[in-house]
Image (cartoon, rainbow, N blue to C red; front, side):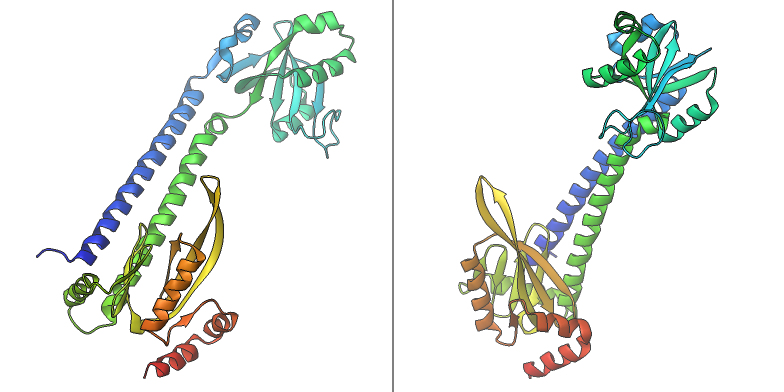
Length: 347
């Protein structure tokens, strides 16, 4: 049996929603796979640096490396943290922990994590395995570090020839791959939450429609189709009002509400910019007699919304129109009493 127009749109909305979620899931998994691949690569086969010539290469930028440093000594230790008691505070907004290390008779700068830095200061190790991503020192940081090293007796000429312009942002293999992993999880969480929320809202509205009548659901859908074909149907944005139903055919929600079960209609205004013109987006809420509530975005003007409310009022005078704190408080404080009073108004 061929689906009715209403159910066709409901199923179409569900299929489109599932496809979009599948695309988001595929995109999320692709990013997660790239992050896990990066973690595996950095964990199992980091780029081993054995000499200063290899470290000086310009191709090392943003590469994950591993350097085994032997017979090292901390030429200077400075922590650029506002609240720190360690080292020399040279910057108000730099939260890095820089150490200057001997490497092949040259000076290698490393930026350690807080825990690694404190451990390094306490233990003063003679050997150290450094893992991290190679970054380029900007001129301000390089100048600050050189000024600190001058206190150890280095001249400007020595520092210009000894200090590498690259530095190592120390991090574990997992930390180096954390960004794509976190992004993938955020994309999945947002898309999954949105998919579930929209699916539940559509399902609740369809179940409500079926529950409001004792007849077979297909007969309800046929009645909705027949009323939608009438010339008297009122259309405003994604909302259509027939003799007995308020039908919503939007991108996120497909629903039909019997006008006799529509308790409250109100909006929450929200501003948004589009094509350099300020337009208004309204979030319209529909409260049903079974306490189910749904909402849609309404992009037409204020006058158009008032026209919609006026038409609803003419079709179902017992429906409460517009937001009211008293109504909201009544529903929150004693919803049973509120809906009982409203149902008596219908008689």
